[in-house]
Length: 230
Picture 1 (tube, rainbow, N blue to C red):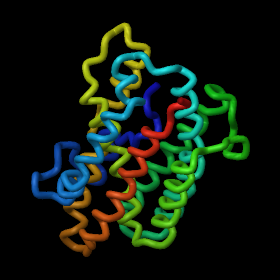
Picture 2: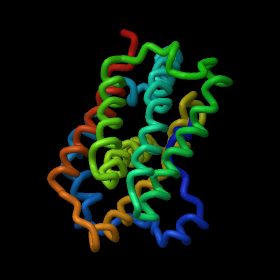
Picture 3: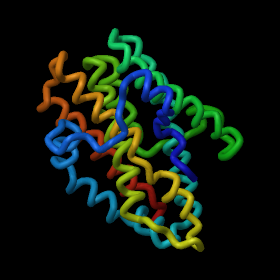
């Protein structure tokens, strides 16, 4: 039940690219964007889906439906991050985007065995999922590649933050592995710290960054909020 599409950054990668997994500075772009959207994060926390993950009462059919909907997003998303990666010359940004691409590819390989689906052709995603996928594709294809990283962070950090709010789960909770598996903000923190270093030599439009970040985290919330079958 772990969100295996989260970006895993091993010690060798962190050392090579001089990245830190400590929380970014309090006045960083990472926290400025998060603070601007904290109300949306709390809405996600209070969705019936997340609250039933917490209590262990979520209908397994709804959990399965959520994951298949997510498969559509991830099958589409892998190519988006490859597109963004090929549009940047910054070595660390390129490496981070490739890590995201690789994590999606690895995650997508689990779907044929776990959910018996091999690609998007047989999936009927909800409208929010389709809009989120189209939004991500637009950013990856048309915005500066740094913004592709920025729209990645809401997913990377929100899921970890949600898991932290739900922790510790009861050992009897069917969804305890989802909670414990997602309770790791280190990848998101590394991205936030990279943004700090990137900004020293490259301009980032913070108003645009916050606008795109807000749209991405809103889609995350809406995906949780629209997933139940009844």
